[in-house]
Length: 407
Ligand code: HAM
Image 1 (cartoon, rainbow, N blue to C red):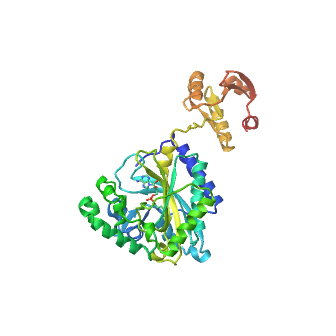
Image 2: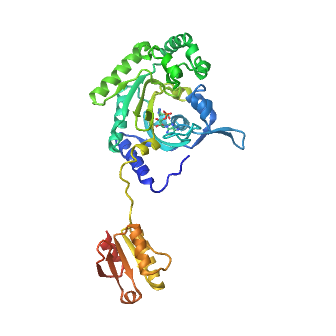
Image 3: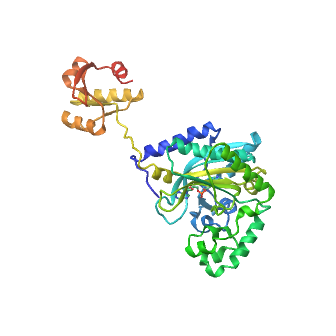
């Protein structure tokens, strides 16, 4: 779990502010949900046989004896809130986005942390493949806006409850013929979650599953048509993508379209954003039978990709140096008034020498310093020094003059 220090926060702010701006152009509105939920919510939505639920959740019993979990992702909590507040009664179509920390007890490595942050977006109530393509267009547009390139969009279809069982069976049969070549984990879980075998990183498992059956050969007519239309819309929008039939998502709620934005720049290939369709999820959680699709981006990974970019260090517009107690009091009063007018001003709080105060102003990067000496204070004036060339001019010491000079 990381601290995000002041030197890093401008990048975080840019990433978050750009998401707010871009997502609202596409009609998304923000939803904020708690960081803890009932454990059961994640077991029912993400799935008992997933890595997340099996071994990565921060789960505890609260004083009331309830099992609670720090959210490992945002989709299930957002659906829980959508159902609980009956948002569908006012409008069965909802476009929602969220931003915040998620928690997974994973093995930490570059780009993989135990508290990490996601910005996610969810569209509820539209099953047309145009929305799949539009969501991807928004994601790609966001990456353009934050100037992150070098990412590849991969898409897949995971079928639906009608065609998935047939595919699962074909995969189980295939795996059973190769059990000897598979790792212990794959052998243990292939019956519950055979798709995970395709995602196993162990070289033996990779090798053994090279010619595994493809999900795309088992799609029913409806899923095939949906996926063909998604690809057609992406082509119409000139969004480059690759079809990856081996893409397996680590959460069970997906159906039909799934996708990942991948980069090679964080060590092994990793996803900076990922998501897909989850048409049965809302009903499964006790809500109406509405389809859904969404994605989440990992902010830490975006920050790592932007690391080489320039980081701006904000500097105050003015530093006020007061010499002597009365001048320091006046400096303090003027600083507060200017700050209330939205001007960034700093001063020295320790009554130090002019030289020390100028050094502090220089360190903070202030372009100008207002020097108030005792004589000047008596005359109602002060020296305004431009730090770049050391030139000084006398100015009237009143707030209106200063406000005009600095706005
Ligand atoms: P996910 O693939 O589990 O999907 O996570 C989405 C993104 O979160 C990943 O692509 C990655 O960038 C980031 N991420 C995940 N785990 C970590 C970690 N331990 N450290 C740093 N970054 C991480 C979901 O969470 C789904 N809720 C996405 C979604 C929304 N699907 C539909 N709607």
